Image 1: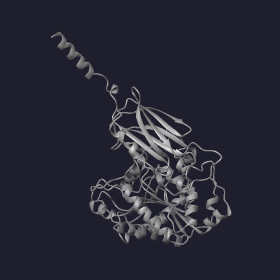
Image 2: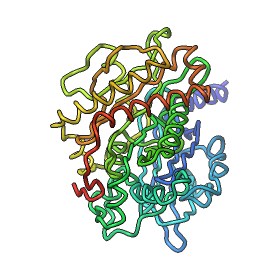
Image 3: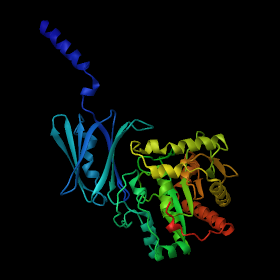
Image 4: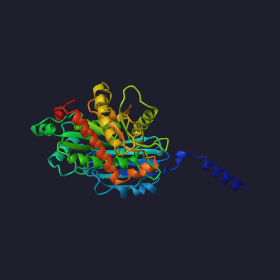
Length: 434
């Protein structure tokens, strides 16, 4: 009887041990490769303790993960590193010592890693995020010059040339879109000639990577629809003399909202068009909408609601808030942009008119709200809600390639009308050094 009582007490004590003593299970391991940077995400029900260090000759990243289960989703991580990953050659995972699992990443190039934890939000639990930036970031301006010299080719994230090595690497976030924060590209004759004869339009496919955006009842993700429309719009623009489309995102990866603004300014864009297909609280909401920035509140409750949802993209996508970028902060805090907003409203009016010719309009006028992605101080910027993905009928149309092309043609038609009435001034965009 005494032995039985001891066993029961021992069992109760084991059940009452703190949950933190148990190994943490990794519920999902995800990899988001892109030329700009590669992101690895480990998701769990508890925060993960870690230690990160690098090893040279050959270049490796080593991450020691404390008190986690070795098997399960973590086992699948190595198989998710494709041979086309721009930064990672391979991955190895094993038990280093009791209580520590070691993850070793063999690298293809010198990198600047950033590792951080994210708290649960939306459908995600705790996330340990590793962002691997190239030490010499891909330069979007050099990619634009490359596309101009070969107009028959559409540059993709995998073919973007790498910028010449700068004198100083600035440790900022996001590195992929802040490459020239302190190393501005100097103007030469060839760059000036490109600037003089080419209109540059920044095409921003909303969401991406860890941030799927809205989703329809049929399982369609906004991030996939917006990228498909953006690519079609770029193709149409590149077929036009004197116009070039630049994709802010050309793959399934996350870019912070402010980083999209910085990237557009780095290629000295004449216009910025952000493409979305949002959800709304009412499933019968339908039609296209166009938005411009507002400095003084939203023009409607719906506009305010949409702006709030879109501005939460950084929380869902995951930004390392411990790293500050003074160049980015300076860009986004420059809100003395009344003239830019007025031009944005003009652009939005023409685009909305074209969209009304092929789809119902949710509102018959350009709305305004505090969308973070529209806060460029010197580039007319609009956000286009192509349709509501939460509406089953519109979700079905958004998945149709012909309908996507119609939307792209409508947006381009509005841009062409805008420039017909508001000719672009001759300006040395590529020489701008602000």
